[in-house]
Length: 101
Image (cartoon, rainbow, N blue to C red; front, side, top):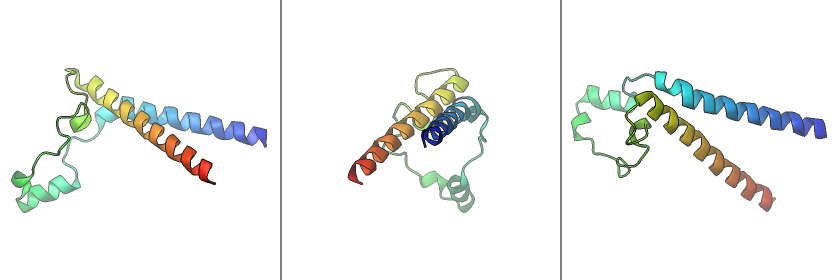
């Protein structure tokens, strides 16, 4: 049983490191083409009526870190922050669920 828990912890650690690597290193190479919703809005002619999000001035808006001139580093840091934030929220939720059961 203890060996099984150790293997599971190793799996989670490797999965987390892979997510950090992908978000921090490969996110820069993601497509710069518009996403599906933006493409449809463009094709249908209502893209110009789009309004900025309420959080468009946030430090991580537009998949980058505001104020950082190096685009590759900006996108990589934003990806790592996203993975870390997701992990913290997930761990907090899992802890709450475990506490209830």
